[in-house]
Length: 161
Image (cartoon, rainbow, N blue to C red):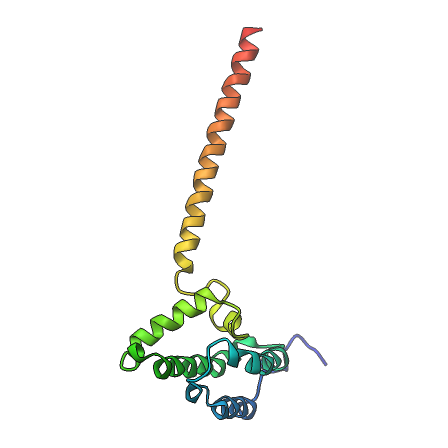
């Protein structure tokens, strides 16, 4: 019977470690970083259905658990860029910067970017949010000034009568 006690343990249904390992193995099998002859528009067409399927199936209850596994794709994309472009060959930070620019320019290129980097957690979003707040405050100040002016006008009109 109930008797005011909770008998269940905390449980969050999510992808099992075995499933996450299978996803990691599949990503590794794609060998994205060895396809430097292809452009960055070609291989997402082949891989996005798989990624979207994993997000839909395993991320039904606990999506954030997929993030570390799916971020491996980002690492392989950076490796691909280092092989593709000579200027990035010896620059890990340069490849990271290139990846950030790619992600900002094409936010829907890979299906997992919305899950891993979206929802206001992208770099640069803090600045946009602060600017948005400042604009709201400015609008609020303008609105209060207009109300004060309207109140003054209404007061003067009542006084004139």
